[in-house]
Image (cartoon, rainbow, N blue to C red; front, side, top):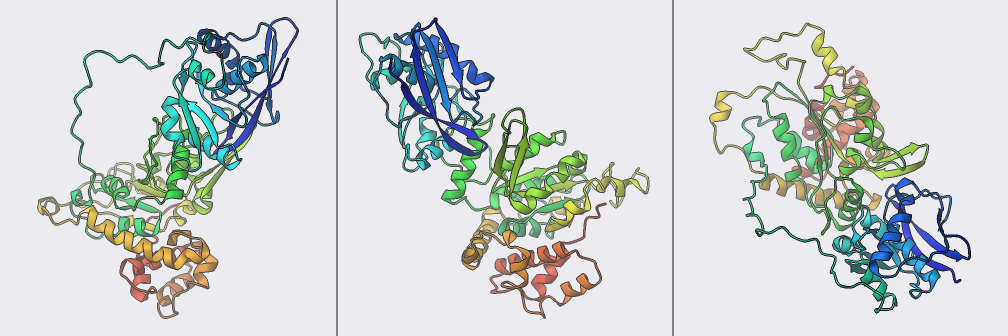
Length: 515
């Protein structure tokens, strides 16, 4: 009998690779053999495809079916190969015609319905990049697949519809159902009114502290806030995404592809234009934060926060090894995760936002309240934030307690919309200045660039140079002060940082004492 051939996509991290699915039917006892390094869920495709084909009206051959996934050395996982495997087997049996370089990405239900799978967006991107622009997906994945420019997407609800489109005999097919999931009686539930978006105007007091999130948003800088409970650390962090500008097309596509791989992702129908906000609990493990898991590693919170905010509330309560695992992506903007079954690379250029109490009871240094901790406990508590980690954080802020006068002063806080306007203007100034080096924001500028091409005049850096001579700063800290100084200058509409800009940036260093 003839050889059947279709195409699918294997995802290794965010990278997709075209897989050639070959099927051969031989004159032997009935069997279904799947070759090419499949995982457990992919091995189960043998039974799913048999049942789906029977219930669509064209059962698989009762001979020996051998399906090979090429290249065999590439790890393959997931149920997204189901449709491609079945189509190649039916081609080998002569039940349907050849499909050319069409890529099939869908899971099969036992009743013949096409079910959606995760990772459709990066898979279609890989197919288009490799010259396979014709893609077949489940109807529930159609909107996500059509987000990829250049893709010719066809979507179907049932296997019978797919077979009819590829030359199957209509007299054999069972086309009675439309594959739709029946809806419960009673109509659509009434929509609840949307809650108002978090706004900087909600933050009472902390007029000095409000400058730090604005600088962080404008330059893409990392931020750590230390203060007693109720000082507004969490409120400021939750309102930081609201003053960030929308993501441009290429960044929105990259972010949407990452979330398409997430096990918690809903069906995506449009690009993620707003920067993501990830807020994991302090009991989160290393794989949950940086990525991992069994098989090919999956993205963690750090990658899901790409081009957005990774907020770690009660940061000293996190495992210290988990916090220190973030040091490498803070510098490189990417995560390469090695496991025995393979290696995966994910982008992770996020803004790290840490919030911490000054001590275990939270009252160290608070006026009018007694701290019950021993003299060494506050130092040990903040010491869980290692000095190498804190040294990589550009803005270090200590917050005071809120007074009754702060709570009573209504309408004194500036709204997020006004701050967002200044942030957009500062980002545009950075884009024009940094575009020649392929950078987007000041936080991405390297030490060599800051000390040569973007070095402020000596008069502006006099205080910073003295701090370096006193060894109050590391070489990394020196460069990060310069980054923040450039952002302060951009917010003020200056062409270059002056002495006051550098002084403001220097004031945001060394407020947090780590061990």
